[in-house]
Image (cartoon, rainbow, N blue to C red; front, top):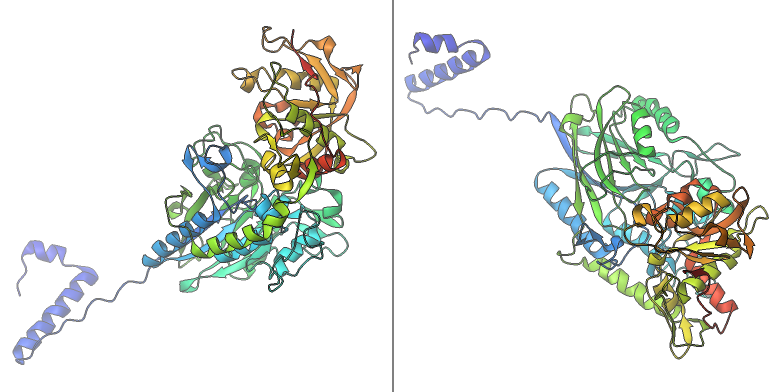
Length: 590
């Protein structure tokens, strides 16, 4: 074997030693007349472990797909959602990761239950917990809606057991199958910042640690919306204390590091708002609470899986050390799943952020339905039938129409507003609402009847969103601004007339935006509205958050969450049985 001068220049260091050794072995083999079998070079140990993290949030018991024509049933026009499809997508993603030698973990950022459709709500959301078990969910932070039926019920969601709720008498039925007891969640509900006031112990586990190959460990910290006590009924959180999300998470970092854990992910039930909600896989102009939280969480925390705002985004927000950190959200109702590739350095045991990527994927309906979820849904559809068909009242006409008159007022809109105004669940501190507002887009169908009899299912079809009623304080000035927003701003192109109770007024369609309402015509309980006077009003939580282009609601104060809008609707029909639609004379035009 001979080398040129150029070869000798190249032949240096360990590479040269290995090559010379190989040459010597060949020479020795040839000299002895033997054969040479050269050993394969040792396979280098991987420098990183790749882990697939799948995340969702704000499922709200949406086991069945929502209508594709509604915003809750599509993503940018693509039909999306449904537990049967979501389960298939999750299985496919796990299989693809496994084929590449990667392990997977599935997590959620709160509000899996609460404000759910009838199929889940009728059974205290037990079907949704069972569905999440079947989908392989491993950990979830507690959202504010997990407290809708109180913290005792939340603990039952974790540990299982049945309620003695009258076997469907109040349109709910725990453990409807007499042969099966509700077993609770197989996954860990996590809430690091919710404590018992008297013991300072957390209501649920603050975090969980998942172990992967190559000895890697990832800690998942669950974080509940700090403002939860302000937006749920007081009795549901009595005896609990909710602490600051950032302070609580940062305090856990040194405790986790003492356990040798360097990879940390926060499951945060708080979120933000991109400027373009259609950009579901990017992060244009993100604003809202999640931005401040992300900027202040300890740099040792490697990623933030967020929720609450029902938006989808895939962001990189700098931590306090100025280094980019992943912040994601997966819309709502199971329409999107976030796929994260966590790349963990095998030496440092920490997440390599530069090689950690995320992708928001639409849960399309072009895959086969998961058979286990189909079986679960079919079972509960059978159980819900008696509740759905229960007669809750009667109407003296074949139906009550949601079709508006020339002013934008409808008979059904008046009925719903009257029901909200009469609902006792929003009365707090001795203050009873005197005005109700209902968005027309939330009225999904005419109220039908069967020979005049109205079933709970027919009422639920009218109001299927399980919104909560919220009472709040607004001044006369704020209410006037609200009325003008029906015809200006986001609603200028297509006027959006709120359905009302307790208030009357006149507006001029020909007047300029911002000056359409005749100020002197606005009356509450028959009396002229006074700018500086504070009035207690009631609406649903969607409008309360400024939905449908009504930011005036966000300026209201002393908000208090009551019961579900569908319950108020059903109770009103029962209390006014039979109901006769009245005239549409609350809103007038010249």
